[in-house]
Length: 411
Image (cartoon, rainbow, N blue to C red; front, side):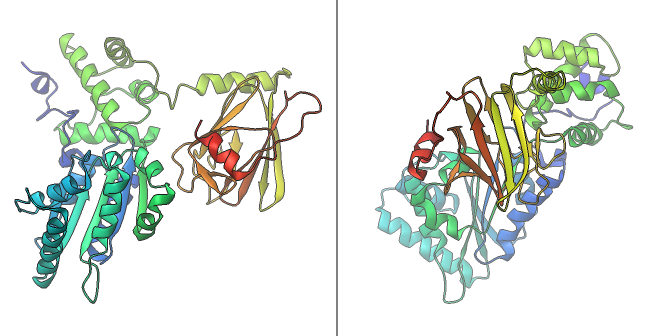
């Protein structure tokens, strides 16, 4: 007897194969789909959707495709480690051509004629590129040129690029400035929060036929979140393993103990996004008891006016608009968990946590950068001034140029 029948289910609730029927519409997934849908009704629709591995991008794309009307002609390219010519061939193949043994100029002519023909027939043409983080800058430039094909009234090719977070970094290249200017919307799909994660699990169990959704006991969810970080694919893996463990023991529901058994079988450690909680609590306790171990000071300025000054011991410091952050900035320009500082005895590294508006040092947007004493980190209209409290007496604060800071970002 399979565990599906054992648990009174109609199908497996936590399969790893993308299935639009199981898609849980968190606010961010709904917003990402709305952005994709905008490519249809905007004549110059060009959208970029990024997300962590296992965040549900592929399932989201499949749900979007299943809702398309008959007047949409689309192509999906998922093999993206291609030369510009190979990429054009892949696109034309998806549109039904046999474009091999042709020169690049012939491929471009075939594509342009196809786009104009579809427009004349009242069709809208959509190109979706999945795994777009693997595209070379030359292929991305080719996509920019393709997006410019137009009639005397409007552009005729709509484009969606979907990929992992590395795509965002690639698009920051000065060489791709013209491509970025063509993009209408960009959105990053992050992991689920604790509340959404529980609703996600209940949703999948419900779709799989279990009524009421009482398969997982209440004490499971905190542990599941701690070890998955809210990443859907990890949630599926852990929950499916737990169900197998319970089935083997002939149990009827999943308890916290069963989740712990599954974690041991998977040999998992706490997810990196949650494993810093205990460390941060220890930092708070040390400050509360007056331990003189502070090595860094952060001054927060808003539009040039100082609003707070805090000093910190070694550890991880989270910056964001959520009140649970160590550096709390209540602002529409700041994401809930915008950035983090990794502080050791002698230095500090700032890292963007996939924020909406980015992290800057000078005019340079950075993903991760080791700070120098006196560096100014910008988040929207807010500035964070870093001071190294362990710098040698009489040391001169850093006054390096933006180029120096840019090179530091690459270290």
